[in-house]
Image 1 (cartoon, one colour):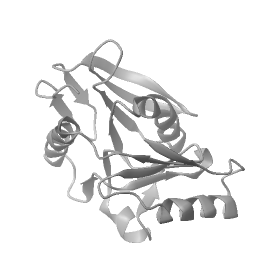
Image 2 (cartoon, rainbow, N blue to C red; image 1 turned 180 degrees about the vertical axis):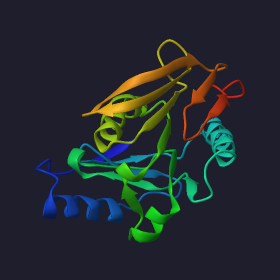
Image 3 (tube, helix red, strand yellow; image 1 turned 135 degrees about the vertical axis):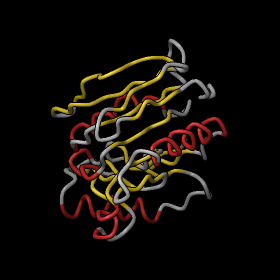
Image 4 (cartoon, one colour; image 1 turned 180 degrees about the horizontal axis):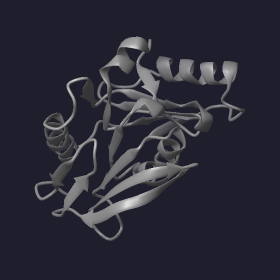
Length: 197
């Protein structure tokens, strides 16, 4: 993973606009994920086959329970300017109307109903710490972290009830357990077929 360092001055007005412009103009190989994490534009390699398999499994389950007015997106930017962040979550569930009214290629993270991040070996700490704090601060109601690289073995953690930049752990388990996403999802997500690594 490579990173381009950017001025860490307050991400307001011109500073945030400049940071977003650098993000938009970053030339990365096809399939790479370009994000802004705490004021730094990062480029991560394309996700592994196991990563894509998990994303597909989760997406298929979500489509069975979400309202028709919502979408499940794998390449949608989620902006958190207050934390100098513009993340590309592995999965974002958001009302379609938000995408139709926002210009560009991202939405305010606060508009998402659920964010799912699937860790990669190179950037797992970003998903566990920095992005979790950003999503909490934005008020994303549910954050599902699928962590195949957790130190104690592959885990799944469902966060909710954001307060400031901290979430409450609603559920934690290992690959193979069933995680229950509360309403408005009402989904029992079986992680038994999630590949590790």
